[in-house]
Amino acid sequence: MKSSCRIVIMPFFFFLFLHASAILDPLDFLALQSIRKSLSDMPGSSFFSSWDFTSDPCSFSGVFCDSNKVVALNLGDPTAGSPGLTGRLDPVIGKLSALTELSLVPGRVIGRLPETLSQCKNLRFLAVSRNFLSGEIPASLSDLRSLRTLDLSYNLLSGPIPPRMGEIATLSNLILCHNRLSGGVPPLISSSLTRLDLKHNDLSGVLSDRSLPSSLQYLSLSSNRLTGSVDRVLDRLDRLNYLDLSMNRFTGSIPGSVFNLPISSLQLQRNLFSGPVRPLDQVTIPTVDLSYNRLSGEISPLLSTVQNLYMNNNKFSGQVPGSFVDRLLAAGIQVLYLQHNYLTGIEINPTAEIPLSSSLCLQYNCMVPPLQTPCPLRAGKQKTRPTAQCSQWRG
Image (cartoon, rainbow, N blue to C red; front, side):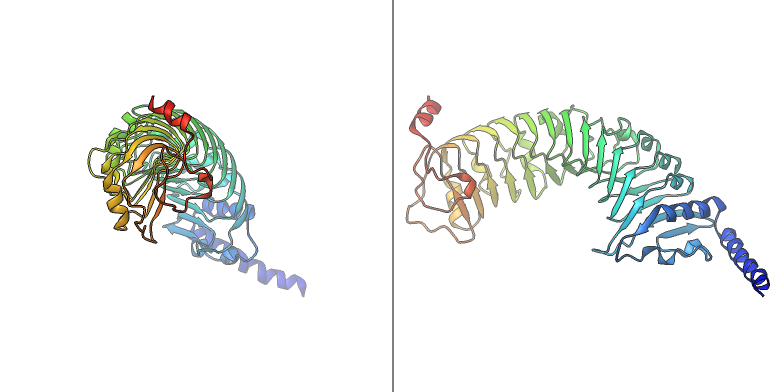
């Protein structure tokens, strides 16, 4: 009786296998099987529940086919807050020769990014962020000449950015932030590149005049160890709508053209910028942070139209322009932090009432603050600079 059951059941599964294979290229079918074995659902995830290889793999969650080939593979449930996957990315992914899109939801996938991805010559979108991938970015990814988006952010990747990555003519989004990448920023010459996010790595070295293409609209290099002057680099980037160079070691002056960019936030804090700040026109950027640098000279009245202005911990001197007072009392300025400079005065009536929506900090300058306003705790308790420091500065 058992023998007869086998005779009935085995042809049935054999038929299903042939059916699936007829729909999908056999190499792609076997590749999906290997991928399934290398990954698992985290507790609470049911992404792989539909991956039943007795049925058509093109109906699996996250698998998209064109004709008999897999063209897109979205691994994991993209629903916000849903658990991700665990395991490793199997190098067999490179066998999916028609693949144009590969994504991996946030989870606990470990190991290296497969070198074999370079075999997917049609790959246009590669996003495997917020996991625990480690090792170096394969240099062979630079051979993906159709790649438009590369997002490897929020992993444990180390080593250099592949030198030829910036030569991919089609690349428009390069997102490598929150890793452990080191070395310099390679020349990025693609005229298609609009978004570059390298923040929170361990990158160092100088940005050359031609390191970044003028096509950039979004640039974040914050929290690295980059050095040197950026005035010539920034002068070329006239299409930016987002800029964050904070927490590096950039030196030299800040070009006046930066203050006329159509951006909502200018983040240049915690660098080694020096010299005067000279916008070319009235500044319309809502938030400007120049704090913790070595900037000096008088404060430009052209900055009085900024809503949130952080100029503390620099070497600014002279009087605070009257236009700042007018804007502050009219609630046009929400944050004005000028503490820890060498400012000598501000013309404001001691009985004036600062709007509740505004914050003003003037302490530790070469003057007695005319108003007692709350300052951040890190500003310290000293109201004025020691006289010796101010005399030496004026001299």
